Image (cartoon, rainbow, N blue to C red; front, side):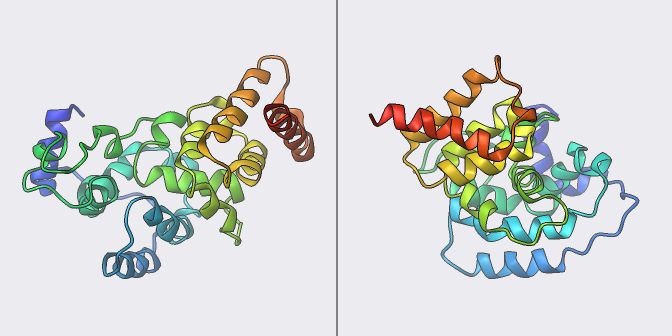
Length: 227
């Protein structure tokens, strides 16, 4: 979809063709969490932590062929919850969708990728809803019950983007270690840890390492930076 096509779709979402997936999805828990969020003062990155668990719980039973189909996430962002996308990245919905992609009136412009994303790890990490689902899927998997680590990830946008911009972000063990080791650190140290692991990826098969070994690599870099 082009950016102009996105503007037209947001002006009248009912014009979009919607196809049903061959699966049952119960969004009642997510809707309840969303209703509570919208009645609160929660804004920006704090919204991620409030919504990631109910969204993942609602969708984690779906086959990968469905969750990796970007049309699912387009439906969330364009048809069902476009106002939430505006609130997350802009603060409020614009009078006209085209205004939302331009700067002015004290609001940040919203990149089109926040509505659309792409069928790649980077694109999943930019779509407003897909980024939440896939972060949880890689950190705790479809059977996980403890979302604390997932919520910690979204306290550091620097870390989330660093992971989703790199191929090793597809590795659950790397996701867990990086989040556990770096999520609470300042952005400069997060960037250093992410770059260090990325630089080692060409000489070390990260997917063959245990989580403790990955943690040692990150800690050795952090100790070197603070020596």
